[in-house]
Length: 168
Length: 422
Image 1 (cartoon, chains in turn brown, red):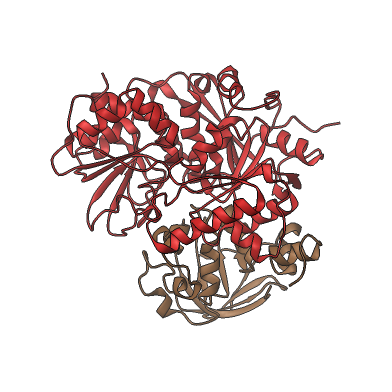
Image 2: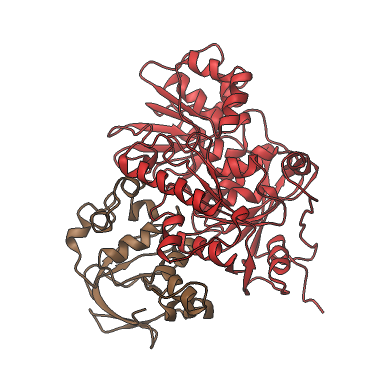
């Protein structure tokens, strides 16, 4: 998994649920991932997909990714070109799903991050640097199990490394 | 020497992993039951195949359920259903078809889960099965696939919040009101990464169906799982359904809890979750009289026989308000049959209701049933009222008990169920 990211911050609030990330209606209607990615956050921020560029970063408050267990949520975020999600806390199912599919999640205090500022994330060094004033926000360390899955590159690669499935 | 006693979830994960663990530890544990429905793309079956895996670890522990879009409303959905059928055939796994019911109802009803089990499924409301005194939690498809291939999955042992239910519910107040009250009290993030352990004489006063309504919604507080005790009521419920001994798991008296919450059931009134958050809860009086255009009774939260009975008792011999729609979706085909035998379905039809296909009909927009128009208000027994949840972000969803929903359908306004219960 990528350990260094740089992109523009798009700030959302607390309790951003997975229905907001990708709605139930769209996820059952649209099978093509590229098309589905254009619907990212549609119900709460219409045209969000048109605002973002590759590498940009979603910033949340508490409990980002709560609600439904749909793995489509982190898949669509990644497919849309978002390089990482930074939040104060993540809902547990979303957290596992994102790590499993190789979308980096970063836990840190997001109170001072402002809409549109450039963020530089360094997960090896453990900080998020704010482009507006150069301030570095420390990142919460990952549990060993999560580190293992992240360094493998997600669940599929981990199962391959462990010999449960063959490499394709 | 043990540092202190264990909570139910600490006991289940210690026993399953063969390690002596407490909250905070990470363990790998074998999975007793794992299931996947048609609501999520990619499907568990698709990810399993895309990984190049050949055989599921144990075909008896893997189940698929077609419930989220039981009418196969679009070609893309029909394609998913066909894929699931093909996978079941190839792998020799159980598949519940369109119209048999919602996954959580079927998994319980058909006796897949026993006390002490570990259950995972690609549905956040998998926590429902905590009512069976099991550790049941929602996962994504990658985790489910790991389970299907290896038979096991890693878990962090959660801290536990003890919820003591005291006394008995007043007339016209229901299990849904208890869990809505708790959602308001703890908040959407209040139990994130934690387990809820329910205890107290109030639990003993609740039926198994009522307990399922409560555990169904613990995810709305962020909880990993919610666990009910194993008592005589649960044993009686499981006796005809499961094979072998039923060994309940109880917490030690000196177990450590991160928080203790008490709810005095006798003092509780009907609760309602207002748009657009499940923890935006108030006593129903606060929104009494709010006009509603649609009423929905069903879903894995409140589509069981007792729920339909509570609604039928209010609707008996009456008709819903002009301009209202009422959809009733029984949680399963057998609930539907029982409701026919009891006369509830006739009551609903005479009152002006439509009966939807058993399963997740009219719960999320993905079911393509009951999608509201712009500006419309819906009162529903479902578990989520997020903006757009029912397919239209410009509509407003209120969550309440089947009695509150039935009463509101009669007048076209949100009502206090206590005034309608005879």
